[in-house]
Structure formats: C-alpha cells, structure tokens
Length: 234
Image (cartoon, rainbow, N blue to C red):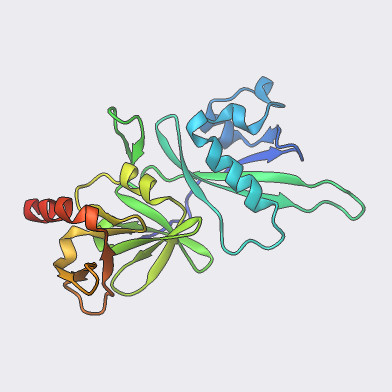
C-alpha cells in the first residue's frame, strides 16, 4: 500500500450556482485541453456521458450541509484516471447563492491505470480509498473482500477496512486482474485467500478465508457453480 504523495498538481474548476464553468486554473486547462472560450458551459459539457451520473452525485453531496465522509470519485478523461472532488464555497454574509469548486488530481500513475481498448475504460491496479481525512492507494492483492455499503463500498484487508466510492460493478470493470470475483450481490471476494466454501443451514453457503481473523462472507446459490470453476482455475 502506497500513501498519496504531496507532489500532485491540483486542477481547479470554479462553478457558478447552476454548475456552469466560470473559471479554471492553468493545470486544469492543460489536462482537460480546454480553451478560455469554452468557459460558461455546464460542467456536463466537459465530461463524457458515462461520467454524468457520478458528477450528479457529487453535486448532490456537495450541497449537503454535513457530508458523512470525503467524497471523491475516479473518472476517465483523455485516457487518464482523475480523482475528482466537489466542494461548496460559502460566500460573504448576505449572499444567497454559493459557488462550487471542483478539484482533481491525476492519479493515473499512482493507480497504475491503463486504458482497456476492448471496454474503453481505464482499468486500475490500485484503488484510492478513504482513510481518516485522506486517501491511500490500496493494492488489489491486499484485499480479502469488498462489501457494498450504500453509496460506497467497504474494502476489508488483513488489518483494517476502508471506504471506496465505486460500485461493485465498477470495481470489477476497472480491476485489471483475475482474482476478484463477485460471490453475492453485495460481496466481491479475492480468490487468492479463499480456503473453502462451507454449507450452513437452510441451503446457505459461506466463503471461509485462509486468515481466521477475516469474517466469512455469504455466497449466492446461483454463484456457487461459477465460483467453484473460478477457484479450480486459481
């Protein structure tokens, strides 16, 4: 696991109350390839359609008075992996409207991201996870399992758990490897650490890991056959 470095360049995009782009710093223009004449358009104009739902969610969270944790997402821009954050800016007293600041850092190198020409998505070997008030880049090989947790996923390693703002589907699409396997609608398991599949009462099964400190996870009945095949390949 590698901690984020302090040498990141930070892109800054200033948004109006209706989320139109009204300014940006030099680094944002360099990364996004935008000219000054592009200012004034909706923030959605600068992102691919597949990223719009993520931007909408960030806009919603940034408008909440007290977000429950740092909100950041990975999006694809020009074959790069960018981690973006959106924050509301409180204006001087008496002002009824707020501006918004969208900041981003290029984490292509830190996540070892590469474009998959078949899927058209940027795939990651490391995931940026929330820890306290910062982000760490977590190697996929240290993950035992991942659990869906509302708008986030919770990643479990040997020593602690972390939050990641990606859905289970997006994790599997973005993970550039063969070891993560969806065993249940709410769980992904790392097949490298599986010891056995155990049948329990009422025809239910659980996955037991080779580390006794890691809790078992449920296995959906319809996934057992594919899981056994994947474990045999492993």
